[in-house]
Image (tube, rainbow, N blue to C red; front, side, top):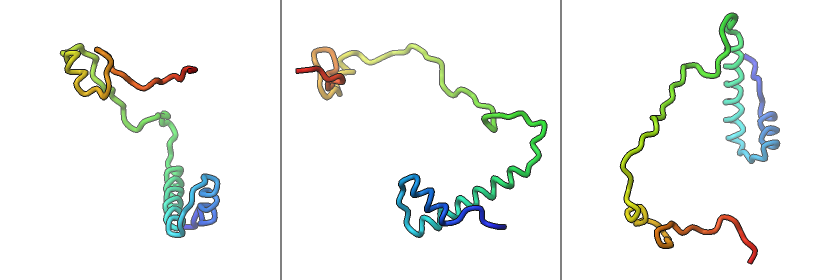
Length: 100
């Protein structure tokens, strides 16, 4: 089967992406991209008439649990590993700069 992509194309794509590739990487990516494009051609040969478009091959199930209120640490236990504290609060570096 004729190749769909060549090393010049990979070099051009690398240039556009501002990625430096070695000769070995150019050769490897040429092979990989060509294989991918040939596989896409195989997929395009499939008859998909009557098949509804979908965004996933399998049904997705929500894997998150419901929020449930549970026991929590006491304030002093929570503050034990605080790098800096100010009384009962965590002390953090300023996020918004102010004029001095």
